Amino acid sequence: MKVLNIFFSATGNTKKVAQRIEQELLTIGHEVDTIQVAKDTETEILDYDFVFIGSGVYTWMPGKPLMEFIGKQREKYGSGEIKPAAPRRAGKKAVIYCTFGGGHTGMNEAVPAIKYMGQLFDHLGYEILGEWFIVGEFHGKLAYLSTSGRLGNIQGRPNERDLQEVAEKVIGILRV
Ligand SMILES: Cc1cc2nc3c(=O)[nH]c(=O)nc-3n(C[C@H](O)[C@H](O)[C@H](O)COP(=O)(O)O)c2cc1C
Image (tube, rainbow, N blue to C red; front, side, top):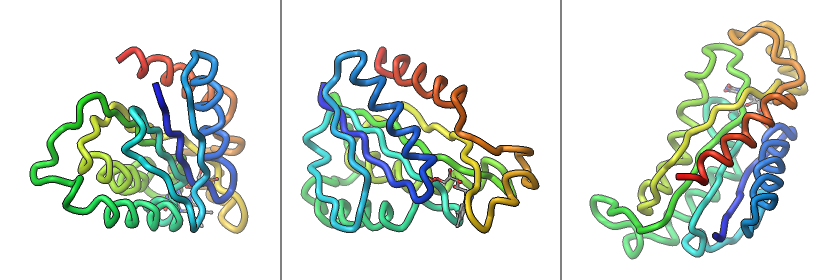
């Protein structure tokens, strides 16, 4: 199966998750293209049977480069591939995930980011098999939120246990 593993990561947390996803996919014998989204990223989503897409959450949404990437895909596929009622596309599946700090309202503030990313794939007719919320510590100026937010102390996350859980879910989801 040809898998696209695409992500945006400003401070490295989502990158750790994307790398674990890649490692797990390779271990079980899938072909995977891992792409860290940048301004000029080009890819043919529809060439892939399975897509993992993830981002850190910034002000409730995916990172700007990923939002721009999604906007460009929507324009590119337009009414040719995005059809009324978004009919399912046989054999196409996606997992949407984010890393988030939840410093103010917990997981709720990551929900818009997940839903935003998912809409591109839902519009294209992909079956969304999972929405994964993975805790990621705040870096930089907002680091104080890693110990004072609604999720308690999230320093060091995603940690090995979080990443192991991701690996288990990759195995589980591919059984579907
Ligand atoms: C500038 C900034 C804004 C953030 N905004 C949010 C937010 O609105 N909601 C949230 O849950 N986490 C927020 N976070 C925490 C990040 O989503 C979290 O640390 C994530 O794991 C970062 O992913 P990355 O390291 O892959 O960039 C913010 C972090 C930064 C640095």
